[in-house]
Image 1 (cartoon, rainbow, N blue to C red):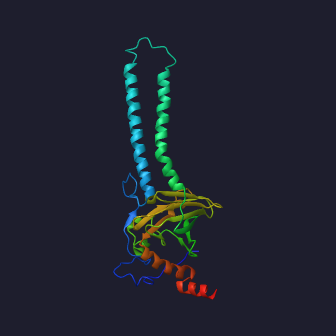
Image 2: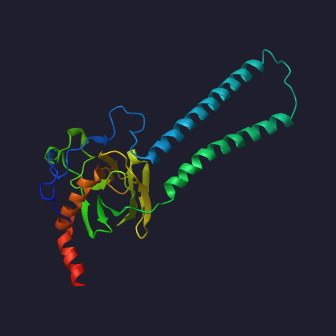
Image 3: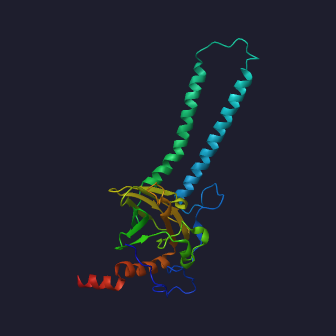
Length: 285
């Protein structure tokens, strides 16, 4: 079921001097989105993504050196062993030193790469203790989110072109922006529990360096800790049907104060939970 948007203003009276988008959050800079003619990575917003970029650059150097070496070796062989210079070809079947070299050197290169890549893999796959846990479920074709520890959830659906301006998004953010965004505080460890409600989907935010398939009947996890406030976009990255291209992901990273205020509003809007009612319930127990 599609859930209505939060009203403006409520819960943010204590935050003067801020301009607010339609969802009641301060206007944020869009940091994580694809750019026209872009061929590189998005600007990283987590240590996970910085590690991935470092590893990618390292591998680029290694494969460039290997490619140049192999190309030069082929060129030399073509020149050295051309028919015009070798009327009678050499006849041999073994060269022990050469065979040992082309076995040991690739193994050494792979060990070197593994020394850098395995720590990045383990850092990504070992899930730390969460400050905030959010369950996300992929559906054909939108995302559902549940703030597990707070007892509320909502659906997130792609905005139509004519809706972008009303929600504070630019025209070039069509196919990226959603009506309701995932909101998280900066500098906190967020654990996303990812699953699918019908077929396999994949939740990803390129600027965070995270991607995880959501498989029906299973719950997988990913984590990130964003160190920049802003708006970050992603898209379903597993072909899931005819509208696969129309289930984007929007994450807004805000300050702790803004997040706390948004959380109060979200509880009241999506679950009817307020701090006061929760305190009264605890007192009655």
